[in-house]
View 1 (cartoon, rainbow, N blue to C red):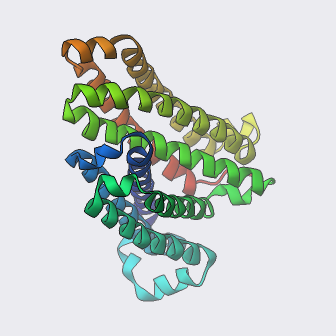
View 2: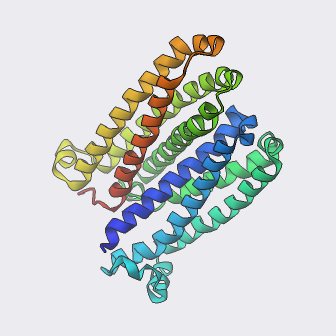
Length: 298
């Protein structure tokens, strides 16, 4: 099995887990502390932690197998892992794995104390510190560090990842936590809050993404003439489709939410739109994972 392809999948799992976990934590800490009682919300955050840890740990051996041109099945070879750990990628990725272990402590405290933890400033500061660490470390193995303006690119990369986490993790909690509860009071309180957060998150990731594209690709010739540029175009096309569904959701919130809450009318169209967004963002993350292994063609 091709190690590069499996490594791309591992990076996608890592990105998805990071988005679910930190986006979910942000959602309950800022928008809906009471949501930690909802089984769907707890599952989203817990699954995010598992995926993030597994994707990170698997990525260490798979990156080594890919670099050594060996089969993906050799990713557990101890000699191969030692070689990876001797390099910069290995040291950075081990730091990330340790941060995921610390994130497990934050998760355990949230699951144990529930809303009290989500409202606690000590818990929020701890969760925020780990989130900052994971996002920063993730950016240290991407193309942002190779640009002609590394500081600008790495700040943009951090903002891009933060926007993705807030948006994608929030979408998952919205679908499996808020909408599954079918509580009119919760809908009236949380959905407008998330609508504003989602708009800000999308604007942040788009602006940061434009800076990254400018710094990484640089010219239209490389955008259309390199593998990296073509993958980036595919990512942008899928993102455009996601944003169309997001606009449908935003329209429903602004025009129909109040009526649905007051009359008990169905919110099924909104559920379908949010579900479509959740499905399509996985393709966006997969394209982002391919970009990590593609050469920008500088």
